[in-house]
Amino acid sequence: LDQFVSQACLPVRDRLRELVDAILPEPVPQQQRDDIVFGMIGMCVNPTHCAQIYEHLGHPVPTTTDAVNRLAHNIADFAIHGLRGLTRSQGESEGEGPPC
Image 1 (cartoon, rainbow, N blue to C red):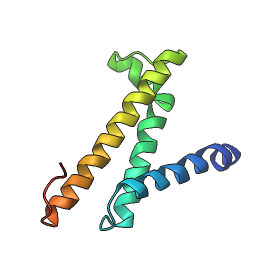
Image 2 (cartoon, rainbow, N blue to C red; image 1 turned 60 degrees about the horizontal axis):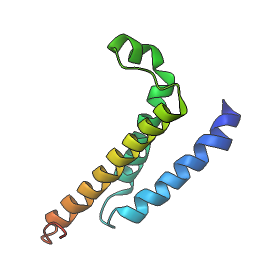
Image 3 (cartoon, rainbow, N blue to C red; image 1 turned 90 degrees about the vertical axis):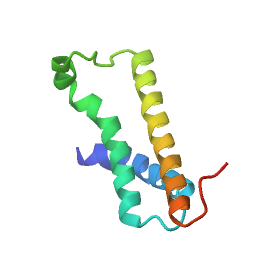
Image 4 (cartoon, rainbow, N blue to C red; image 1 turned 120 degrees about the vertical axis):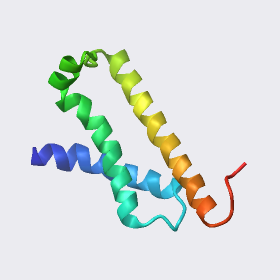
């Protein structure tokens, strides 16, 4: 597990941090940025490690390349739109209003 985390998970976490930092405005605190990164990681890891829960809830576990790609696309869209919404709300709280 240590080797997997260091070789696979840490680079993904670091890249997500770079993306979050590039999208969010400066005033967003580091703790909130970290929470967002780990939330995205949680969305990605959950389907892999919770297959039995998926099955019990009646949702198909993604097992094909197409199903995994579809899930990854949905997670990415959800995360990006959430970041954009957070960016807009930060601007509104500063009196700038939503971006056009």
